[in-house]
Length: 114
Length: 111
Image (cartoon, rainbow over all chains, first blue to last red):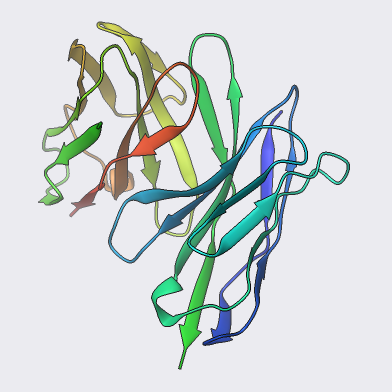
């Protein structure tokens, strides 16, 4: 079956520190990969995505590269801000032919302090 | 541009009471619609999805049901809530099997 494994949190960083959140996946077929972010009390927002191997998704200073050989999609940011504090979800999407379905990781909470 | 709205945002319901959460999508036609649940300490679980009016697929057996009476309307219901139904419910949409976009979510507390 399909699954996503994320590093467990919480991750606590000082402002301007480098961020890496690891994500690996198992999938049948060729999934698209996503990072979603959930700010406190809010729904999920799409952060970035990649639809095929070697694609790099980027948004708001965050980046992730689709690595088929290591089945990974690690999230990185060079310099985090307090406003980046949130829960980050890695997910894969498989198109079943009737409807696409997302499989999520368990989420990683990031807390950035001054 | 497309937008998605769901309501109510927060509700507290007694055990055994009914539930109705509503979701509408604007700015598109014939979207795929989804209901997800995020329970405390757990990940996101797909509950239902719909590829068209009146077409509902259930992913997990439970105390909930879903309906799609109109093209852009998706409703999550229960006749009698259980404590275990508490959680954060998210409606979502997609077009053509591509990216899935989420609403603001509804917090349900069953007491």
